[in-house]
Length: 155
Image (cartoon, rainbow, N blue to C red):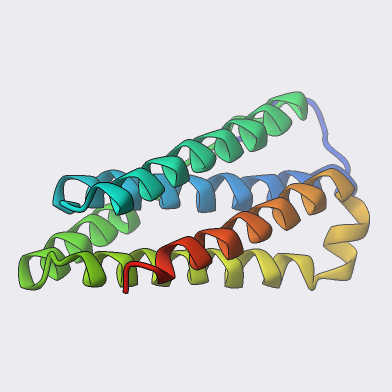
């Protein structure tokens, strides 16, 4: 997150941090899907994961727009984090690219997002200063919980 030249308040810093974390989480989810899609052979799972990709991209766009409204630019995770995730997917799918294993990997990613968003939502000061971001994080948690239910069918 890069700050504009204008001075931002503590409330805006909290809001920017919250939206930035939502953006990063959504982008990591989208990257995970993009890395896994070539390994998905089962049409039903491919459809579910493609819907998830669309949702992640929409959440990332909403968070990026909120950051732009604050005069800030959304930034993805650093290259090392993204490459580590990509290599992890490659290694895990090289060992087992079966439908059940891919669904399990997506479930793990969804659980990570739920955990990250819940930590943010448990921070009262952060939530009090960023009600819009709090709503978006709650929506993301609900999405991921729905994703979990859809993915369980492929275990």
